[in-house]
Image (cartoon, rainbow, N blue to C red):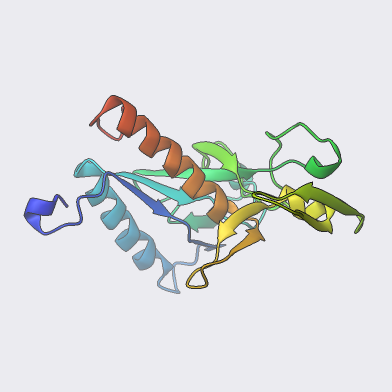
Length: 188
C-alpha cells in the first residue's frame, strides 16, 4: 500500500522464497494458494510489481499439472527461473543456459536471471584476482555460483538458486523504474 495508506510504499517486491508441492485437495494447500494469490493480486492492483523465485526442484511445470510452485504461480506474480554458466573459471562463455535445478516451463516462467550452479565436474582449483588486492583460490565450480550477502554476518558467500536469480531480476526492474519513472506493473 502507499505510504499515505500506512504501507511501505514499495514499487517492486522480491520474494526469494517458495514451495513446490503436489496439489492435494485434502491437505489445505488450496487455502494457502488462495491466500497468497489474494496478497499478490492486491499488491499488483496497487501498482506493485511482485517478483518471485520459480523454485529449485527441476520440475517441468508444463508437464506436471499436479504440482504447484508458490508464490511463483500466484496471481500477478512475475516468476524467475535461474541461468548459470558451467565452467566460467575455465573459459565458459554461455551464461544463458538453464541452471540444473531450476523449475521451468512456459506456464511458470516469466523471465530468467543469473542463479548460479555447481555442475562443473571435479574439484580442480582455479585462482582469480580479488579486489582491492590478493587472489582467491577455490574449486573451479565455485566460480559458477553467485556471490551473495550473508544474512546478519556482514560477509559474502557463494550460493545458487532461483532465490539468487529473483533479486537480480528485481534489481533490473528497479533500474528501469529509476530511469523511466513511475509505471504500471504491466508496463514495467
